[in-house]
Amino acid sequence: MISPDRTVASATSTAASGAQVMADQSVGFQMSQNDVPLRVAVLGSTGSIGKNTLEVIAASDGRFEVHLLCGHRSIDVLVEQARIYRPRWVVVTDPKAAAAIGSGAFPEGTELVIGPERLEELLASPEVDRVVSAIVGAAGLRSTWSALAAGKTVALANKETLVTAGPLVTQLAARSGGVIVPVDSEHSAIHQALRSGRRHEVQRVVLTASGGPFRTHSKEQLCDVRPEEALQHPTWSMGPKITIDSATMMNKALEIIEARWLFDLQADQLGVVVHPQSIIHSFVEFVDGSVIAQLGPPDMKLPIQYALAYPERYDGPAQRLDFGVAQRLEFSPPDLERFPAVRLGYDVAARGGTAGVVLNAANEEAVQAFLDGVVKFQQIAELCERAVEEHPFLGDPTLEDILRLDVWARKEVQTWMC
Image (cartoon, rainbow, N blue to C red):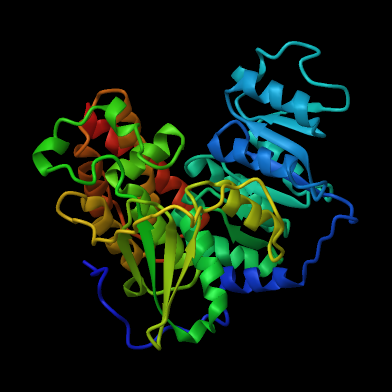
């Protein structure tokens, strides 16, 4: 196990790092209110991140426009969004759901496109300037891959892309000229804090965690957790899968792995601290002992806007901190006995290879089984650990290997739950 408190004698140089080089490349991008609006494809527009993205675009004073909306099954929401934002394309990735759409559902000038393959084709179109990758789960990998292969700037909210195929994705972007700017609040905070020093001066990165709704629960209490309790997050408003991940702290495991590849860090440069107020979103510690943090209310509009507009900043719809009100910031180390998912995240980040894709796939299946009442809360991490331990590990996988083991892990977990 990699200890979250372990310090590193020297930070790695990331001059050749795919994700960091990509972020630096975008510094030359300039945008003003007089420019032609940047055309944005919003993948997963009917989810929490997608809806917040549309609010950010609506408040951007013409800097951005919605050019493509993509959803899977939430057709009513997608139709309403199309009527408001009038995109060039609406993509429905589920053909069965698309069959229920009546004629005249979309406004004039909006074309309905069906299927994930067509989505991948459209993302390569020169009409698309920015892509917001907010499809939940491993399903977002292919579309993100297509956008980066076409050299697009991707505002990445789909952490599973880097969890499952981090080295391949960053190498692809480096080859194609694609740009990755993170949307996750923790990785956005790290991205911002890293600009306070040079990369070889980085000692370690510490991701903050709210601790979820069961931060103070005992192991015995966790045995009796019900799905409706786990869905009540104390500070963030998110979709069901991400909310359960926060309750198990598996979201922090996935974020550790994502940060490993996104910022080209070593596993022992990564740590986690529980911060229930969710005001500090992450820290970067430099070799001289200076610690730089990024603060903000628990509102995803800020990291979304930062990713869309990077490297510029402008006034937007995000909440602001009120320093006229007394506030308290608390920090404590995570309890790896009660929340073993965090320990699993350290282990998988250190191991690399196919461990990430198996962890992610097993977790997606286990979370759904918990929501369906098939497994208990604590079994989620147990099933994930078993999948990682028993899978046919590959240290240097191809994309085909990753997709194959994604399927393998899902089938194995389903078999164990029967």
